Length: 389
Image (tube, rainbow, N blue to C red; front, side, top):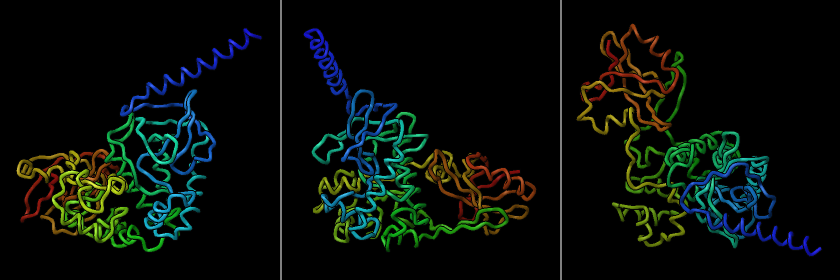
């Protein structure tokens, strides 16, 4: 009996030491990939936070980038903010939170992969860490937004995770998924009222139709928008209305931000009266202070350094081609080339295609991400692209 008790105590001690060593080895700020994770049933679990088993250990994780509705009214301020974001009654936030929790529970059935840097997620009385979850090629954060069950809010990653995206690309994808969910009235957006997000969608001058198999697109010029081409809000160029779409920013704070320009860093926004560290944390992942460099091999990339690229051969990465009503030179036909690189939009340009190549050109460039080389040319004050014979 004494031998058995010693064995049992040694086993317990070994497990305790192993767990302590793992906790001590958590290197904050360095990505760790945890395979074969499983969800642990817990009253703490909701749409964006949950207890996870990884190996012999367990911990509570909260998703980067997104925030699912609350499942209770403990944090009244957060419930009000979520109700405002989705433009739904506060009592509907709790119901929506239960739907998001159920969605996450179903998504996390079986094993999945967790990416974490062991960054403190704060909130509640128990230790939580930020993380990203991937299963069957899909990210839980993306699926929640795509299904209209979470808002884009909170802590972003600061760099790409292993085999993952850079933060700007991932955030852009989330914004695109949210716009699609809003238009389709998916999830919470099905009962959303006249929220600023919905109003913004309805006012977008972006309408597409198909003409002779070619997409025709009418867009509002990105040069006339205060919002960044990344889908984020540039606090140095955004209008007051655009600033007010940020969580916690009303008319007064929007005007204060405008008056404080130029804003050199995101962190300096806390110097504005009314913007605390907590308030800034709510929208810092949605803003920028300077435009990032355009993606390579795109229209925006060459226009940013037009002096060196005008009247030279350039190569564009073509995302799509649409019809264009511009008057073209004799024996040429005009189209609009829409460019992108690495999943990031890179602007569009009028292009002139020789008549004899037009049909084959349209057919070939139906497939996205194909390259095209031609002349960047000034035609009566407009920069155009010419596909030469």
